[in-house]
View 1: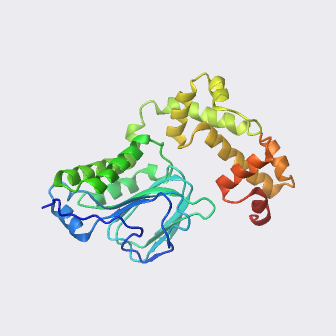
View 2 (view 1 turned 120 degrees about the vertical axis):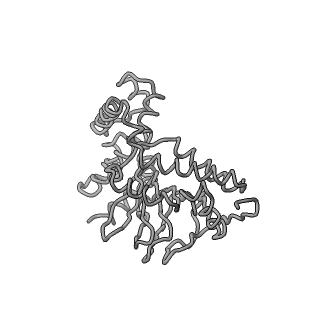
Length: 310
């Protein structure tokens, strides 16, 4: 019987790890690990035995985050990257994880994953188990969408936050059942996201693709969201929501990312000074350009030029 006697542990390190380079927590992190007694009750409960969360968390800007499990984990692992990037290894193959990518790892199978040092990821993650878990994994692996990015959705983040809040505030039977039903909904929104996005997908993608192409061709300009909205004859708020849903970024954030990527090319393959590169990309203030570059790349343009060739 699931009831008030449950005790949840809010901890800074995960369980069941063969090795970890995480020595300290991440500023702003969220994490809950359920005790074994709680997981046992969930497995026997009629509603939660099909799907139940065992661990849940959020790691922002997870510098030095690195997990190696030579024998795998006891549960299935879901990870969703919202910013930065990382790598995961499974079956001797590696795959890069970019913003709005997710992956699911099988249980009891050796794997490894880590945040990239130059752009450490921010991730939402869950460990889960249950009678339905293997089928969800098989649906994920058989669907081509697991190879790339999915559209950003505030709904998923809000859903995660609701699940986490329940786990930290209400331990009753009905609350735990509801939290795990929401957890299944959360995972399913990724595994089956293509069904949600089939309607009008070509129309919206066409507009976003046009905007992305326009921004790529105008990296030398200093554009504001209002300039872009006037160019395409849509309101700034409409374009913001559309672009955010497709790419995970606002228009200007995406524009700046593309500029920084171009700056990296200039730094590696030309003799232009940092000031000249900033001007080439529409930044009239060299100090602002350097701060923006360091924010995205983790080091100054000069340090990047001196140490990042290869």
